[in-house]
Figure 1 (cartoon, rainbow, N blue to C red):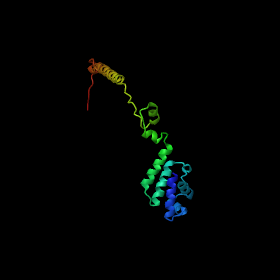
Figure 2 (cartoon, rainbow, N blue to C red):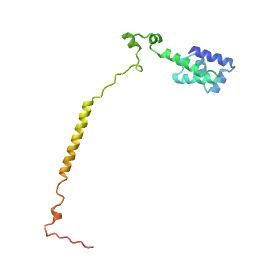
Figure 3 (cartoon, one colour):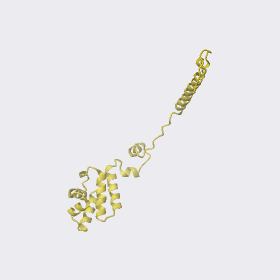
Figure 4 (cartoon, one colour):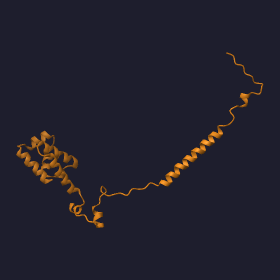
Length: 162
């Protein structure tokens, strides 16, 4: 990061821009710009905001933003990676090195097979239970619809008048 900051500072001076002027144009504090130029990463709480500040500063100075972004990403990889780049490049089939190089993002996870037999058994059981309820419902609904009230025993005669 120090190299990136040094490059940004040299470019700013070469363009004849003061820290105060750049600070005002970029809506950043002078202290933030000084920390970027000094490569002081710890002055920033969020590495993503630092990356955006570096991009904005590079764009403001008319520099190649993609090149500086790549350099910043390389710096962050080296700073945050627990695996050395040499170990990755010279990876051998050695099991201890294999464990050292593996990461949760590159590991091939074994697929967990779903227990098909219990699932099929549960579905078949549900279908059987539903069929039993349906059969019981049909049998219980086959009761005689005609009741004694409808048949009448002869004594109850209803007359309808309109």
